[in-house]
Length: 149
Image (cartoon, rainbow, N blue to C red):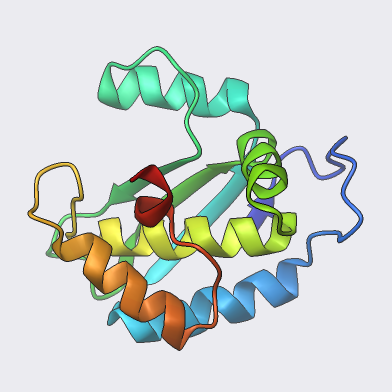
């Protein structure tokens, strides 16, 4: 399920977010990544991502996406949760010349890879390679890790 909090985002976006379109993409991306368990997604604010980042990672700053995998014992049923900052996503979309829905899809794929156990902060480029491959399969624009280079 995808929840938008607050439901009426003040973001000036010519292409509005469609929960049904994002849910269809999320399901396609879950299948492509190989995740069978359900994934909950909340699209929220920088303030909420900052609060979550501080509480769970000890980092007192906003970020674009956070991934919360579940224990392996229940991952087949519920793979985990994702939190995305719509404010950061909107800024990144503008920076990279695409729409907010496209940026949210890029972030969803990135988060799903983390739920699947990938970690670009500790691997030797495996997550970046997999994200690039899946981005092409899912017809997405520039990948998150790719942009950081």
